[in-house]
Every structure is written in structure tokens, then in C-alpha cells.
Image (cartoon, rainbow, N blue to C red; front, side, top):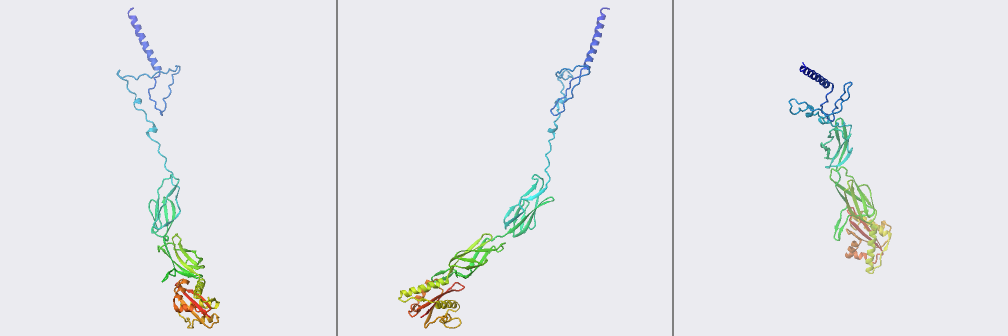
Length: 393
């Protein structure tokens, strides 16, 4: 009996030990084996059983081995939970709706065949939208989808820029500018044996000016006249009044800036008559003949005859009377009278030279029986000079 008792006691002790061991394992909670990924929620805190002291931290126990080999991997260790931000990026914000639409200009003046580009402006600047362009008159101004406008012909058109219910406008005016100007006067240059006489006018005369512009379909053909050189004044766009002797330049300028000029000669007929009188007296002095004395009646008669020989170049007057009757009309008292006529010479020296080269005229000019004389000069509408000297005793 002594031998059996220790065996039973050991059996009971083993059973008790096994029971105590089992109870101890049931009371102590197992540590969590879940994997923490940044961004995930942390594992819930472990709460000790009532009456038990909090277990001190210890390394996680090794995973159980099913067959004594390598530990089985934890599902959470091999397949980490993806971060929501990495899996699906945040969408970009949608552009704001278009609130207002304008163009970079509201109107434009274009030269025919020119182009310009209209630029739409959105508000807000980053608003979403597309535009289309429309011309109210494609025969005048055409526009493409990029807003480039082509000026086809003179006139007006409205370009519309449309986006949805919004519209912006640009008024287009197409012009055709004057590119060439030509200007002329009524009188032409005259060629004589002694040279070329430029277009010539007398002081006090009106000079008619004609101006032509090109192209013929120019939008604004208006021109303005300006004068320089000899003293003159413009009377509108086609007339100049000559006020002083000398070279006169007349310039016609179009609105576009294109211009052209013509130069004429303006003479003082009274001064020319005085030069003739002086040259003849110089010739008389050279011949030893006394100089003519100036006389108002003979001077007036010479001026009247100069105007008459434009109508009828003869020693009789247009009314059929003799030429010397002009002295009578001017109140001159005389016993003997004479006259010298000429036309075409364009300077006093030229006409006196021609007279002195003609024996009958030279004899009259140097005749000592004539003590008084007057000279007259006239200019016809073609710019031809007519010269007269009237003599009396």
C-alpha cells in the first residue's frame, strides 16, 4: 500500500496542476496580432480583467506552428490595407461658368485688303467656354473661326463673337484711301523760240486748279490746297488767287496724306510795262535820242490797246476804229501818234529785242519826233503775252 499511494498522489497533483495551468491561461488575455498601417485606426486598447494587474508589455508571442515548421504568415502582414488617398486621388475643381464676354476692341477702321484679329475676353478669366464669330456683311468684312477679320470692300459690318447666350460686338468700317494725287492748272507751259514759258498768271488773277485722285473708288476723295513761294491765297479746293509776283507752288493733299504739286509763274503786268519803257529809253539813249517822258494818257491808251489786241491783233480796234483813237478815248492831246504791237514774247527784254530787230519798229521806237510814250502788257487765258507801246509828240 505504501507503493501505490505516492502514485495516486502524483496523479492528483498532476491533475490539479493541469487545472491550475488551464485556469491561468484562460485569465490572461492574448496580445493582438493585427498590423498597423499609418492612416488606419489604431487597435483598441487592451483592458485587464477586473482585479488583475495590468500586464507588462512583452514581445508578441510567436505565431503558433501547425506542424512544427515555419510560422504561418498573418493575413494582415501579407496584405496591408491600401490608403484611401493613394487608391483614389481627389478630383480637380471644375472651371467656373462664363459670366461675361467682351472683345479686345469695340470698333476698328480698316484699309481695304488689310486684316486684324479680334481676341475674346472671358470673365472670369478661367471660365470654360468656346466662341464662334459671325459677320453681318461678309461682302465688306469676312471673319474666320479664330477671329481674323479680312477687309474685302469699302463699307460697314458688325462682327459678333458668340458663346452660349453671351455676345460681344465689334463695328468694322472698311475704307479705301487715296494713294495717288495729280494736280494741274488751266494754263500749260508754252514753248517759244526763246525757250519754254512756264504756266503764267498775272498778279490779281484767279488760277483754276484741277486735282485727280486714285483709286477711282476711294472712300474719301477730298483734297486741300496749300500755296508756297509767291504770295497767294486759296479759295476752296480748286482756286488760287495770285497776290504777288514770283514762283508759286500749289500743293494738293488728300486725307490719306498723298500729295502732288505744280509750280506756276506769277507776273506783275504793270512792272513788266515799266521794264519795257525803261529798255526802250535805254535804246534811245544808245542811239543818241532823248528819252520818252512818262505820260498817263499814253500809258492808259497802251493798256487799253493791249487788251484789245488779244481779241484782234491788228492796227485797227475791235470796233473798227484806228488804233490811235485809244489816245482820244484817254484824253490825250497830240498831233502825231504811233504804236508798236507784239505778242508771244514772255519777257520785256525779249519783246524790246524783237522790236529793235525789226527796221520799221526800230524807226518808230527811236523816232525823235515822239516825246511821250506809254507801254501796256496783257495776258490771255492761255498765258500768252501781248505787248503795246503808244507814242505821241
